[in-house]
Length: 162
Ligand SMILES: Nc1ncnc2c1ncn2[C@@H]1O[C@H](COP(=O)(O)OP(=O)(O)OP(=O)(O)O)[C@@H](O)[C@H]1O
Ligand SMILES: [Mg+2]
Image 1 (spheres, helix red, strand yellow):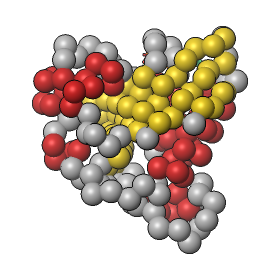
Image 2 (cartoon, helix red, strand yellow; image 1 turned 60 degrees about the vertical axis):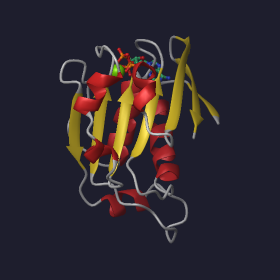
Image 3 (spheres, helix red, strand yellow; image 1 turned 120 degrees about the horizontal axis):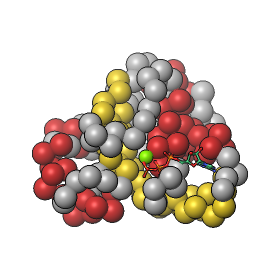
């Protein structure tokens, strides 16, 4: 699907809508979202929107230096019921949001150390990876890819593939 947003706020709102869709993907592994796009495309803005929808209070910045950051999610079900259309549908419960920035990584081996199998194998984790194109080799086969293109000062084209 392709979406066009005309402000950072619209990108964050889109993230909330996408979260509703993602929470219906039932799997035995973590939900991995690969975020692609140039510097300033809006990857972190999208992550902030997801975090907002999950009522994570911490301020989210690109983890450029820490490389990975974990945000616990409390009472996911209550949060998510507000953003999905059918309140009766089956949803998965996320307990942790992991935010990674691979901009400074040399290659996928670095990521293997940072983002353990344990994190990737836990279905209660949502793992958001900025600059995922640098670590393509170790991304789980099943992941969601979001590519953001800078169209104009405040306009972004956001392509979501699963
Ligand atoms: N429609 C839009 N969607 C998202 N961000 C937008 C939009 N319009 C303008 N912006 C601005 O673009 C910038 C996006 O920055 P952001 O940190 O999210 O990018 P990034 O892709 O994470 O960059 P980096 O690779 O440096 O981490 C912000 O300053 C934001 O305000
Ligand atoms: Mg960023």
